[in-house]
Amino acid sequence: MDLKVFEFNMLPTNTYVVWDDGGEALLIDPACYGQDEQQILARFLTSKGLKVRHILCTHFHFDHVFGVPFAETQCGIRCEAHEGDTWWAEHNADEARAFGIPYPGTPPTIGHPLADGDVIQCGTLDFQCLYTPGHSRGGVCFYCAAEGLLFAGDTLFAYGGVGRTDLHGGDYGELIHSVRTQLFTLPETTMVYPGHGSSTTIRTERMFHNL
Ligand SMILES: [Zn+2]
Ligand SMILES: [Zn+2]
Image (cartoon, rainbow, N blue to C red; front, side, top):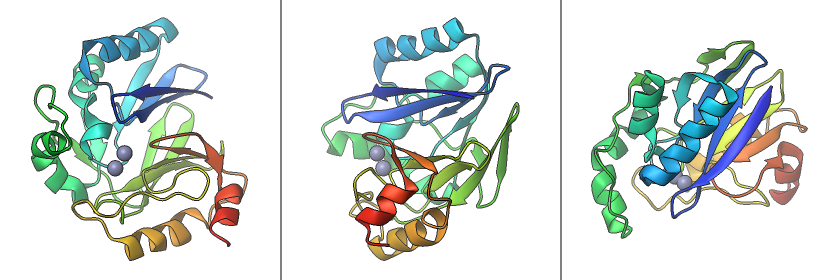
């Protein structure tokens, strides 16, 4: 297994590519904004000879999905996300403008719905979808037990942070419940890759949250 992180767009948002030894890949939160960032992603996938099997969205906030339409065209597949974020799919252009960001092109829609417990297979890698609402209604994390990896979106950040809950569909109590029941129950050595900022572990974050 191998993994690459890109920081894309002005917010800046993490885009992850993870692939198995046969070059079968998952693309998580393609956040590339504009042609230059699209080409950085495309060139990387080509240079490694990766075959993207799934485009996964931890949630549908505009900063995480700017690059979804490009990735869908490039890879010939639709994105996967939780339908709890349908409101965001319908309002992303307006919401981006409210942040002073002109929306590039047409915002994506949810291609395939994800639900808690879904298993996403990619070559020899299996990822489990964990439903973690609170930052948004449709927040999910992707967990690979065999590799001890978690892609946490904006549910959990390094050094004691959690996602903001003041945007549409946010709920602080629900977010903390998601973190405690879905994430802090994972093995302590699990590596956590958030939607913004650096990686961390479940052990470190449990310490920050005094658990
Ligand atoms: Zn978000
Ligand atoms: Zn974000």
